[in-house]
Image 1: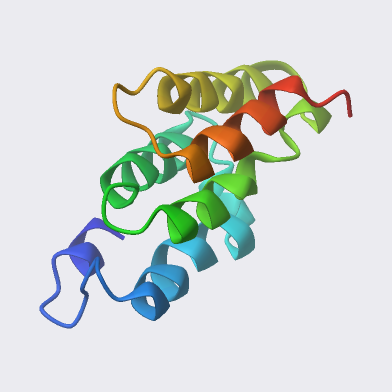
Image 2: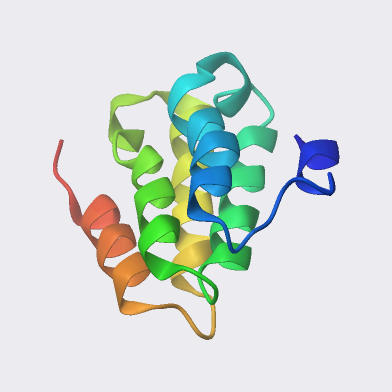
Length: 109
């Protein structure tokens, strides 16, 4: 994933590229996104924070992948919650991303 982010064909300002790479990873690559050590969660949180100043709407779409974090048990649940809390603590977070993060953290599912 990281080498694809550095590829000359990838542009963080191109919403389709971001959705195709980061969005697909977070929503469709469950084995890697939910990897035991939490690297997938950290990667997505990093990308959301990186993307938010450029395109808050796409960043909020991607952060929505954490929406079901309460359905997980043990470490995966805690790691997802930690990623959401890290995004929430960011100094300059858009309203779009803040709304989704707050909704995820407040959900009673």
